[in-house]
Image (cartoon, rainbow, N blue to C red):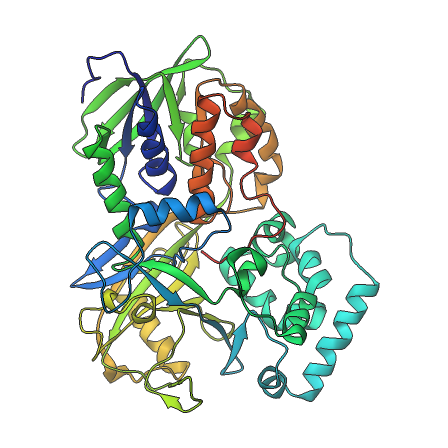
Length: 502
């Protein structure tokens, strides 16, 4: 791992997730900067990786390839062209039907909630009247949005909030919505409200283009043949072909400063060997809680360091369950019963189970499952915090719990299980509580470091989608080349119209 003996400036990029790989790819287009990616893990893709389990592939968290940003859409399709299922080449994007539903009261509800006879009949007339009444009250008596609870009630009314948002939000974040900042809603729900749902139902408008409807209402998306990791593995290969450096299993332990700027990083290999790499620029997608304590030769003010170190995260466990069939059945396009559920994922609102969402990998892409015709591959998603009771459960115990919950929900019989596989992901979700209230002073300090660019979900401690993480990298490269100011880097994912659930 030696610096190239040429006149190119060197950019060290920490992390080989969507942000880091995008940054390297974009830098190579300019030709005068040599990007070197350091990734602590042994695989690329970050949270957008695909895990191969005996030929059955798991998408960690679920990643729909959809963006309101045309630059990102073109970027994806330049890497992996769109194909049809019948003519699908090895490196191809498929167009997939989008369907997510809520499982509540042991019934399926559309997600987002639709103003339909089906919804009202499942809720019952008394609940329906309560929903409408509480929404009218919420429109008349708007709350000051001091918490996520306030945010939801203003947009959906108290009854619908308690039915479909309160318990699920607590599962995901381990906090009641009244303890969470309204910032979360302003990034994740944004333009969606009960009014939007009603307007959509009354006008019966059809999707004519990505930018014409709320993103939660999109009906289709793109998806790589073998999952999101396939695209990022392809990008990593292209980076190496174009002369970029990519080193897996190397964790950055120190960022070394001189005259207030990073001039090198110290990294440690998985074998414990340390290397020092010189750099002209540093692009970091590592968690801020790890980045600032790594600064060597630069004094970080105590309030800034204390805030960064205490930033909260939620961790994530996916239990893959391979089945020879399911007890619960779906509904075909003609209204008749179908042999499988049609969902990409299902939000589990029931209080008697810990599972938060269930993915159906067959429906993301039929190529995700080794025997798509005869088996079903589910991914049960559990939200937790590193070190808590759920995180420290053994793989065998958490697999047994996942199977038991599927049986309890009526989805399967235990005899249908072929095998299971457990994946744990640390710091999957930057959280908006605790010391997050001081994030602006962390940003202000980092913005004062001229050749440092913080990108991606953890690099900015922002609940970004995949395309947002990519855009933060693209804007960082633009900042380096003087095409825009630093505000553009941090303004990604602050608009009031984007929503998608990755």
